[in-house]
Image 1 (cartoon, rainbow, N blue to C red):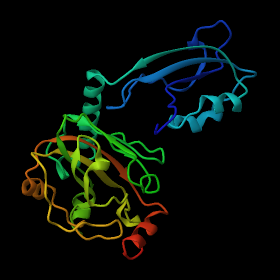
Image 2 (cartoon, rainbow, N blue to C red):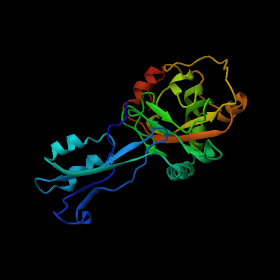
Image 3 (cartoon, rainbow, N blue to C red):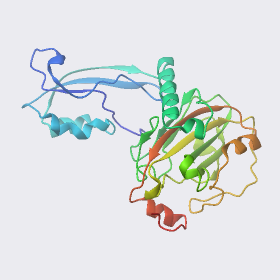
Image 4 (cartoon, helix red, strand yellow):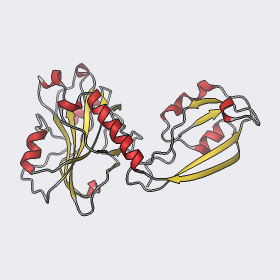
Length: 289
């Protein structure tokens, strides 16, 4: 089932009849095909519509996000007539993998996840989608409301018959670490390849919940390859408990469980919104300030 039905890659309006497209008004800049890892071939459709009147650029601010676009609804809303089209198909290649890995490395360093949590970036940028429409892109900012539910899909280039550990960690910075260490938001072990839903959930998922006073926090998805099956003896943690979450020691966990390389990661940043008090209540904590 698709996470997004359509994604907008380019939008140009008011192109004069018979003129080059450069004579029109670009309201959503062009980005080429970039299908996520593990999703196979994507279809990229170029459409040309005849306008019934001149359009104003300020009508298109809502389309800058690109996601959850609907060509059909768009044409109806602006009274457009489809007159031409074409398409091609594309899937992830080494160029995209290298570009995404470089963007992730740059963002991890820019926002100091390296060195606060990690020593180095992995070779892969994990693909993380939420049913809310949120999509993690190398440190983009998402609201707690957007990420309150468990991700709809996490993808990376997994080796056949291998097992993986998947986690989400609130990487505290030097200032917030003075009041406690990193926080574990999600932990799944023994994920067969990237079928995370078939893994063993040890710590149930909770989304971001930074108090107002903390400002913006960094939330990091990490995927480690396992040497074999893990048999954790710690108690499981539900999504209504903070047991086993606070002061999480990532390096200690890696050593204790013999985890191999960090094969993929990605992260987002998040600050307080109206969902945070609900999360604190769910966890049995006092309302944050």
